[in-house]
Image 1: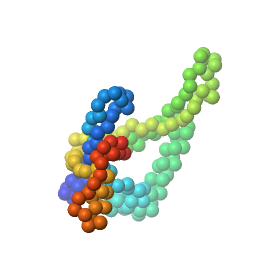
Image 2: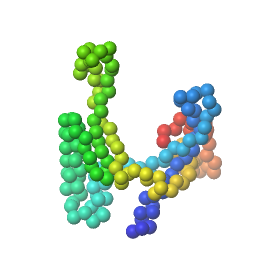
Image 3: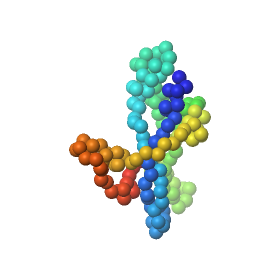
Image 4: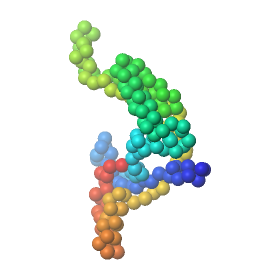
Length: 167
């Protein structure tokens, strides 16, 4: 089991040159781009929970997780903070436009009602549990695959194009 858990702790990143949008006059600097391994859906997460020895079926786990979402949303809409223990806390906040006086301020000045999230202990300080592994950019990987499928031995891409690549 320990070896299987080790595989989950490797995270890949590539590096690209980017300008600081707050200081566009500065020279570009190298920044890491996290290379996501994939997306785990709610159904796949429930299946994974079941495979970890849960006595509940995947459908029951999905149902409970869906109920947590629905109930959390309901409490947030009533102005509550929802504490999910090691998962974290969800709490509401507002965006607003100021008014000249207290008397002039009304609910019309409130422009949005949002949800904020604070990491719980299970997700806080994960840096010490992960090992980073440098890899090529997704663009370079795609170019190499294309070249290979065309029977070429070299791939061509312009690294400068990676400058604005999404992480």
